[in-house]
Length: 272
Image 1 (spheres, rainbow, N blue to C red):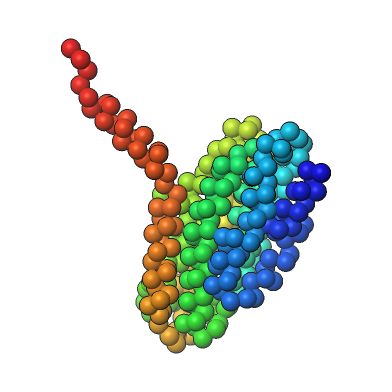
Image 2 (image 1 turned 120 degrees about the horizontal axis):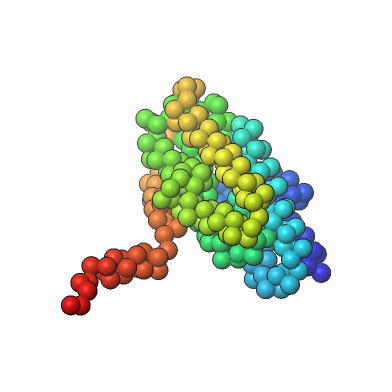
């Protein structure tokens, strides 16, 4: 029964071998992709397993299988994104990879880490999708990243939004993706699963690689064709909001309060 439930969750959240539908589903409008494929629809499988984690914990073999599937998926998604040239397909395979991280967290019994990464992923992946939509609009519906290039001067806002989104996707320190992905890797180590941890690290390396490729080819590569439009104000307002969430959305307030409380305690003089 648990394997059947996981099979449904794997199909819904595009895990190996039921992942091939997700890149093709990105053919729709980019705002729809940002909402459904980054934050709601594809994460339903994650929620199903996280909501029933106590039931899955009664079958350790099933949890271990979930973790293995997650690791395979995150590596496959990251390496596939590295080989793509279509902007939206790169983000689609990136989504598959990040969903693999969430299943890895579930497989080691840490539903909180999986849901935490689900939240931060919604911030930075929605930012990347909407930035991609604005970029495609400005480039007269061009989606091949190698037909863009050199746009950092003509599209500074998109360069900034893509830079922040790619930084959070690559889990650079002090971004939202850093806090959630590092927590997943930490929980994997605490579960005494070194091979799965190495798989997560390898996936993180490939994620940083295709994130850097995506950013530098579009904004620092050789100029192929100039942009034909500027970013509309309505798009810019949404991008700025998501940029802030992608930067600070992973900070846990209780951790900050505890840190300052500890500092205050250390500054109180000891009684004579």
